[in-house]
Image (tube, rainbow, N blue to C red):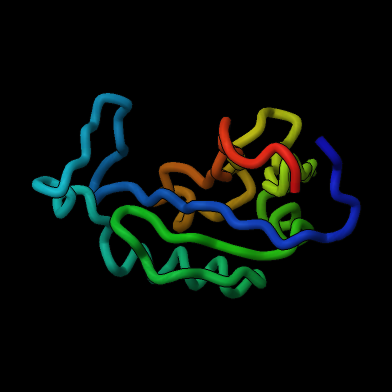
Length: 132
């Protein structure tokens, strides 16, 4: 794995909480019940606006989440953590001192972190090309 030294563009998934609660490890979200887990539109507007105001690109919500993109430095400022970005077999992944995927929410204002379940990077696949 090679560490990337510049300010690479990263993408992370923002998982929103359902109205009035948290997701539990036992929740099984299916096409039949997904509507019960969709976040409040007002909460999505607050959270996407927060990230856009800090220099992130945001996608339209898809189900219970949306994607944020931005340079490594923007992620580090917003989440108050130092990231290590690596590239393996053409796939870029990021981690911090606490672990490889989930970002800390401590630095976010209450009106944002109270409606977010997690902000996470997608893990690199365990399969794929061996040479790029």
